Length: 156
Image 1: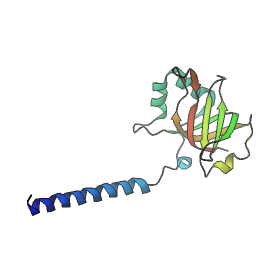
Image 2 (image 1 turned 180 degrees about the horizontal axis):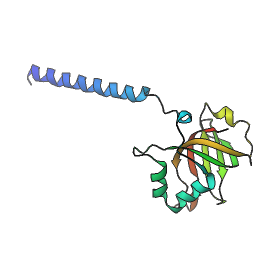
Image 3 (image 1 turned 90 degrees about the vertical axis):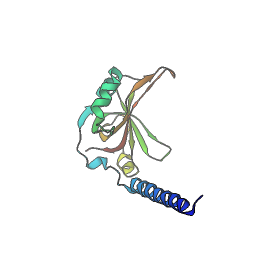
Image 4 (image 1 turned 60 degrees about the horizontal axis):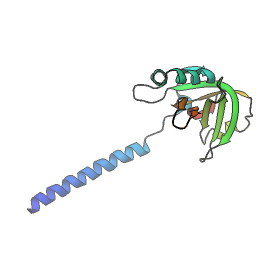
């Protein structure tokens, strides 16, 4: 092959690597969305959120997700059913619903864990966060799955 063609191919490859690396760095260092400073879309009871997803998951997703698929920020109110710590050492509080098998699982962040440290079962709380997934019945596993709210913190 001609040396000038090899140089052109090498130059194109280097430029491609630089552009790709720059884009990856931009995405990696891009500031994360601060959920707690964003305006709340709606305040809702845990039972109502569960019932909306069980009735029509597509309609609920349209309601709680924006055009880009990002979850809108919501406040969920409910009674604490359980308190756990996940594999990332984050507090996970499950709120009761009228369906005894379902609830709303609220995962706190590393920064907001301290705010959940004094919570007890049967406390009534408000949690601000984003919807990760809605409540549903998994026919393959034959079990219900809780609605999941992430990046949570308590609302006073």
